[in-house]
Length: 221
Image 1: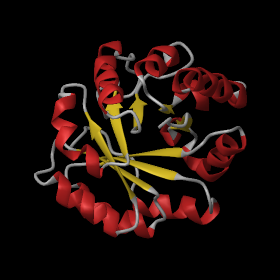
Image 2 (image 1 turned 60 degrees about the vertical axis):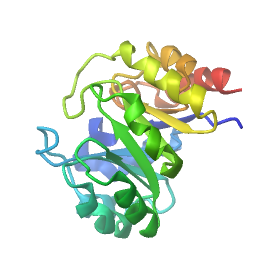
Image 3 (image 1 turned 180 degrees about the horizontal axis):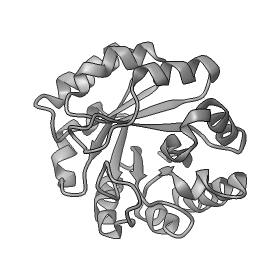
């Protein structure tokens, strides 16, 4: 079973005061989905935005696929509000959660797909018992919550392990990914690529998205 190459820009790097227009521009330039970083100031030190902003964005952008990356201490707290806001994929970190299966079921019951994320310090094998319930697994390639970090190539064995053991799984990478690091991610087996500054800040967004997708497609055939 082959997986599809998808590029999902992180809109955290966009002009937040003009988010709907910036997001629509990314979609017009070929983005497959939008990656929305939600931080609570507890699980990670930074604070970003919550469900009211996601809902406002959905009111302007009706059909795009929204992924919320929940870098929060209590992901179960935000399931219903995010479902109501129009989120398609609810990706949460397994580290602070006692019952990952229960939270995943609640996400499904709310009508969203399940994404499971791990920080750089978390072993990929910690995901093993939950992969059957996940639609997407996200391997962080920087420490979540901090901007401007360098891509951690040493995370690629996690991606390789997942691809080897779960060939049909959607595997996402996030953090420091751009034209210079995309090949390494694609070669390891990642097919969903989150990219922030490299796409959002590009002079030609469409070209960067197209080039990165082409690299991923080369390895997903």
